[in-house]
Length: 99
Image (cartoon, rainbow, N blue to C red):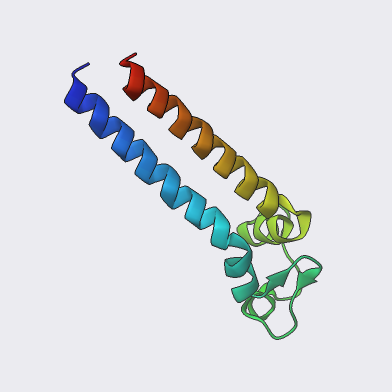
């Protein structure tokens, strides 16, 4: 693989991980904006408006509500930043020592 192609791959992956990290950083706020909290749907919110009588198991609304209530948003944020940090360290070492 040529050096310029390798650099382009690193720049692409670093940019992708940055976007994913920012998305994970704002995920709790996005869920709150659509009307979900850690204790369930917020009364009068967007989510409860479209919820209707119930939520079908396995639907997008069910998975979104589970995501908001389970605490996975914190886990996703932490794991994304750890992965991003490890990737950056590996790329720094690779570029410094031309591995």
